[in-house]
Image 1: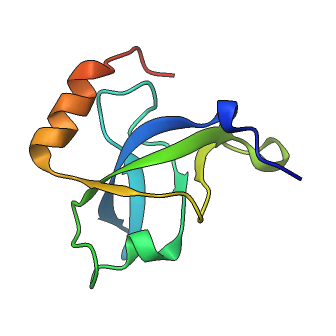
Image 2: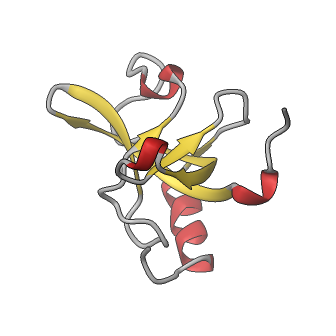
Amino acid sequence: MTRDLFEYREVAVESLQEGGQVVLRPVNGQAFSSEMRVQCSQRLRDTSAYPLGTSFLVLAKMTDRLGGEPYLYVFHGDPVKVLAPAQLEQFLNDRRRLRI
């Protein structure tokens, strides 16, 4: 079964600590709420490789498994780009939208 790549879009996410765990959330200022969960590869949450607050550019799609809360899904095999603060600002300025 192949993935429908048209369902995926570029999203800037950042790592942060919540309840003792490292999680990823969309960066504020995009189409997605900064409260939305992000399901991704464990390697992006590894603080020995990426310190807290690291921003990533990922391909993600919005989904809701079995009718639950919507979340962003990042396929574990897709390339991920670490964003410098200036790159993040440029990305957000180029893609400012209303939140979903």
